[in-house]
Structure formats: C-alpha cells, structure tokens
Length: 311
Image (cartoon, rainbow, N blue to C red; front, side, top):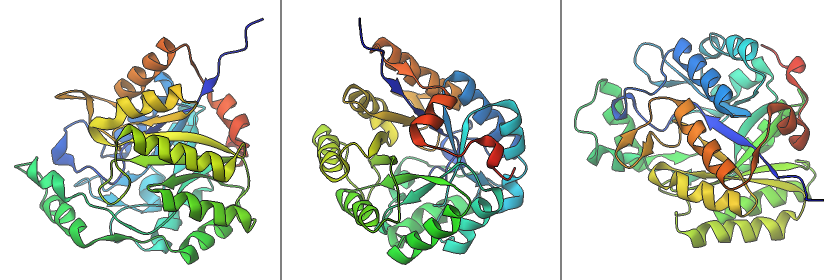
C-alpha cells in the first residue's frame, strides 16, 4: 500500500509592513481589504493567515489593536484558517506596541523574530519613482539606519506573556544565528516542540537566496532540532516561487502572500493574495503533495483551537 501523501502547510502573509502602497495598487490597506484578502487566501488553500494592520487613511503600518479589531472577527467568522498575528510590527514600533494586539486578541499563533538585525528596505527607492504618500519615501530611506530590535529580553518577554494565553509561535529565522538562538531557548525550556520554524531568505541584512543558503538553513535546523520541528520557507520578492518549490520538495512547508512578494510572475503584479496562494497550491499538487487543511495544521502544530481566542 502506498504511503499517504505528505501534508504541506501553506501560510499566507496578507499585507505586512515591508511593502509600501506605491509598489502595487493591490496591497490590502483598509480593514475590509485585509479581511477580503485573508478570506480569499483561505479559500484558495492557505491554512494559516499571517496578519499585520495598516492605517486605513494612508497605508502606514500600525500596531493599533482597534484597527486589528475591525478585521479579525470577520476573518474568524468567514474562514476556519489559523490566525497568526505579528509581533514584529513595523519600523520603530516598541516591543510593547508590538505586543498590544496579541495580548488583547490571544490568537492561536504569533510570529516571533529570533534576533536583532539590519533590515534594509531602501533598495526599493531605486524601483519606485513616484510615491502616493509622504511617509513612504522616508520609511524606506530610514531603513538604512534601522536595527530591527529583538533582544533575548524582548523574546523572553513575548514568550512569557503570550504563552500565558496558550499562543504558539511561527519562529522567524532570517539567518543561521537565529536558529542557534532558537536552540538556546529550546535548551532552556522556554519553547516547546513542535517548533514551527520559518526560514526567511532575501531580506537585505539576512541570509541570501542561493539554493546553498536554503540547504545550509535546512541542514542546521535538522542538526539542532531533529524531529522537534516543522520547517517552512519564505522567499522574499522574485525568489519566492523557486525557493518555496525547492523547500517543498525537501520536506518543508511554504509561505506566500503580498507581504513577501507583490509579483505573481516576472513583471506581473499579483492582484490578490488568493492569486499567490492558488499558484503555490497548484505547484504543490503538481509535485504530488497535499495541502494541509486548517484542522490538519492545528493538529500538526499543537494549537489551542479557534474557540480559545479573544476575537
């Protein structure tokens, strides 16, 4: 008898804090647009929805729980997908601002970045010639001097405060050292298997996008975590599809969405998160891989269930 097909968890990052509105007219900005983008992604096959919020007036990233509260209940009502709220936020948000929404909403999952790093968005300035909002150019330019702060003290505080609500984590690892930081937390008993390890490729300041970079992250994670983790792959920008395809073949789960790339193909803007999820799902199925349902993802990641959230 043939072994059952492996289940691949597809995460969709719906809007994020990386791209600015002038890069694409399809970036979800308002609460209604974010809700519609998330619902469409879930219908296309995403089991997990990774969510940020934006100021509805100008698209600036915001940590305001009241903005999140305008789309989270609708997403929960219209999908059974796992809601994963950022603790990364955006530039110059304090740790307390980044925690405000997760503490209020008590989601099943949150992202958690595994180290401080340079986070360079400024190369986008060479590609966008006209900006719709005054804040965008400055936001990109300031990333030259921006350190994305995630100290051990910050990480410990997030683990403790959200752990009290049963929230589990998407551990975001932008470089090999971040994997070792996560292993340190595991050794101390501050995190618990199964670990959901999101390895991120292509952010200026983190690891690159060569296939050897993906192999290095996989080999290191295997050595550090053995069978105590589930691996996922995030390829930024134009590197998304080749890296998630390679990672899926190697046994990984995958992430897509307009936070990570605004393109569906070379020179073709994605018109929705659903477009990106549908393309990834099609690739997985052509590789004879099955896409995990939200219920299957919850079981694989030992999540508390949607009845225990605060929205």
